[in-house]
Image 1 (tube, one colour):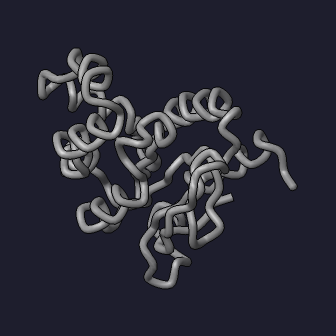
Image 2 (tube, rainbow, N blue to C red):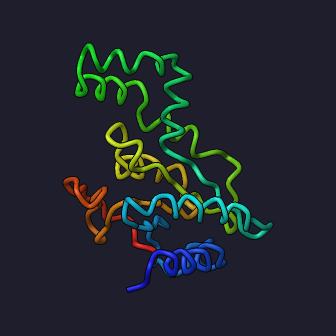
Image 3 (cartoon, rainbow, N blue to C red):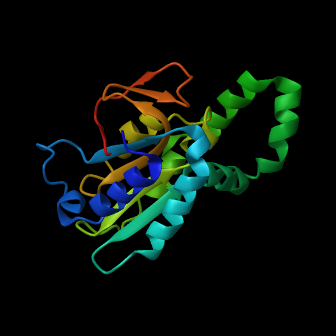
Length: 186
């Protein structure tokens, strides 16, 4: 089995390829892919993504969105960011999770992720921060909600855990969530 750096090198070559960007070879399936890695490898993956952004050309443009940053920005826009610690202390974690999910649902993420200016055949949407935004957002529910809005741009989820083609298991520890509309990338 290849080490992380070899897999990241393979990923770099794949996401820049015109066939990947056009979604060819998927038999009309949605172009959603997962790059799975061990949670402790997050710094290496983050560094890789910074380098990948520098590789942007007129034919390839990675559009990277950190789901945790989007979550924090949405909370700040609602004016609730500063109140979150006190709310958790007073009302408990389960109450806080329910309130935050009601205030910052999938639609808040979609508004920030699905801009009109994505270009088919050039852009790849890369989602990061999956582990950091948990449990406020589950990536499989976001992908289900996002799919109608982004139909012809490849989506790559950088995932700290495993995906066996049917189930996502965040951090390789949490109970798996079913998701069958995606593929492992490398």
